[in-house]
Each structure stands twice: as C-alpha cells, then as structure tokens.
Image 1 (cartoon, rainbow, N blue to C red):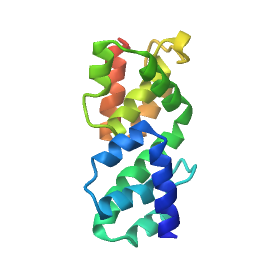
Image 2: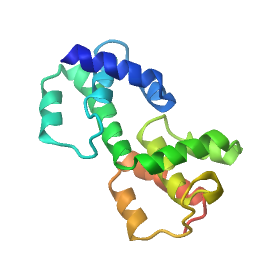
Image 3: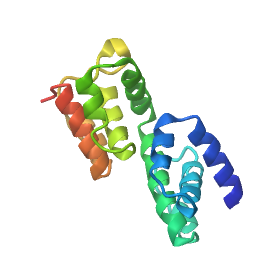
Length: 164
C-alpha cells in the first residue's frame, strides 16, 4: 500500500508546481517519501478522519513529518478546490511585483494556498474570481478553516485586494 501511494504521490507532484515547490523543501530520504504518501493518501477527501491519522501513525517518524505536511495541505485544498484553482490561475496571469512578493512572502505551501483561496474570493472577476469586496461570515469561515500559515496567506491577499 505504501509504495502505491508513494508512486501515485510522486506522479501528482510532478504535475503540480505548488506541490513540487513544497516537496523540494523536504529533506531527501524518508521525509520526501512521506510527502509523496501524504499527497496521494487523502484522495479527494475534504476532512481529516481517523483513518488518515491511523495511516500516519503507522509511518516512521521521518516519514510522518513529510506526510502530515502534504496530507493536511491536500485536504485543505480539496475543501476549497474551486477557489484555490481560480486563485492559482490568477497568479499565473498576474505579473505585478507587489502580487508576486505578497504570494511568495513565505515558502510554498499552506501560505500560498491561503493566498490563492483569498484570490479566488476577492480577486478580479474578469479573471474568474468571485470579486468580493468585503469580508463576511462566509469568507471568514473559510479563513478560519486554514492553519495559521494559510491564514497569513489569506490575510496577505485580502490586504493586496484592499478588502475591508
């Protein structure tokens, strides 16, 4: 089972620039293997469940670190896949220095995901975003579901889009 997840995770990483950037930050060896496992293990799940935790608990300590990072990222991205996808597409089309600096203020990962989700909410509607202009219970609920790194990225995007 581990080798199937690891192979599938590697393939998924090879097709995803953000995951590739995250994987590069992992030390070679078991942590990278764990990262690959964590990319594939959640599938399309949008919530953490005891089965995921049980899988991770069965890994070596070094594998567990990489697995937890990527699995938490995948579950969070799955939960807001539409917004995250739109936000990533906006990032591909936006070349201003301020935007690039804000999106890359922290290493690739949860921060970038939070930034992309907020871009999908508050970005330019002509680029596919929802074009919201103010925060409200919906956007704050999405933000609250992110970990602290994701919340920092979300906040950075709100600041960039001048959301009150």
